[in-house]
Length: 611
Figure: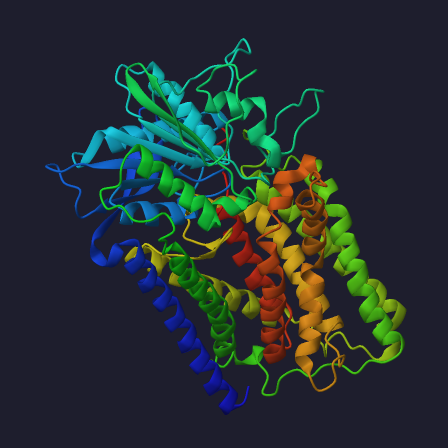
């Protein structure tokens, strides 16, 4: 890079650091209510023999003399406590003491070996909350999304067996209630507690019933069928009863107490529930109705979106930092041999060269789209116990990534021998061939960039209780055990894709299509990278939103995993191209991105213990 470009890169690096700091400070200010809410990270040993972790939000008005109602919030499967930010931000600012838990085998909590122990964790959090002097034990609520909702049901069962019942209100978020007992009879396990359901009309996993002909119903029709109606009728047989409605609170006196039943029914999907103004309004309204907020605010008075916006600012800064820090490091004396004074120029192609370019991109997209579902359905990617690998979700995704990477490598081999070699493609000139000393420096620099980049994440977490995220994509801290888990096979398989893809898009597909506008080529390869995810998501959801069922009902969870890729895949392609132009080295961005994506994947999922 020239001196002027180096100076510009240094300025952008400073801007990226400022963006991450602004993101962290703004997140802290919002989460603490400008200093009126204390946040503590708790790590406690449960009476089941495993440790759990959570963030405790303590409003200033909650004291031993004036205890406040308390609420446990729980994320769903393959997530972590940060995914409940809409709920813990809004509930804490309304005066509730909130404990946002990491379920067992998630986040910073200990790993367990079966799903039963995972769902048992929420009641452990309830007991922690009940022991706090500034929590009103007579007003403790719980809410959980997806498996967090299943954990709520498990907590109710455990609470029913306890000598002293601790839970007074429960809101299931995108999770079915317990409708019938072991004999199939309608039941009310919630008793005199207040209970509600946040039932998404386009839920991919729950809210299905059976109609009069024995056919499975769609989630959007959930409220009109027997399961929902029995719930609204407090666990009794709804046959012959007047149809009860969504978004209406129903009351009945049970054991001398007036109990509540309500179903909220927003037109959203399952994963959208923890990124939804409507779903958050349901949570606020429910607990205002059942526990009473010490600092009541209208349900639509929400600021968590501002936090998410600043989290996104930090995420953008994180991506900019990776790119600019790498580019500046290649200007240091030790790594200078990896850099170039002038950016790599695109290759000129015409005729058959353009056909190979478009053909390889199209075939790659078709292959990626075609093999995703078969791999996911045949590789134990959704398990409820340790079954070969500790993390089943990254296992499936990295298998697919490796398959796509191997296809890209095969395509490059065919392209080179069938066309490129005879048309002047020099593998050394474009960076495919690299000496061992240069490869060693490449690996060392990649390791430094990865460590420093995640150092920024750990810094923001330690000082500000913040990370960088948007919706289902989160760059967060991780414990040492996640590093050990990530090494094999996940990192190896992700590297096959990210290194192979970097070589393909830079050494074979960086050409003059777009003319003087070189960014057009970058946009084309970025779109090609994300196209399989876009195609599969459209195939899955367009029929669903049109009133039919999901296209891939048997792979509904695995298709949800494609949402983060809508950001990761194109951004990775753009970062890869930026680094390649300054280094003529496709392996450097490939290794950096492969390891970073591995750690993002392995720190945001469920980890089974083998014993």
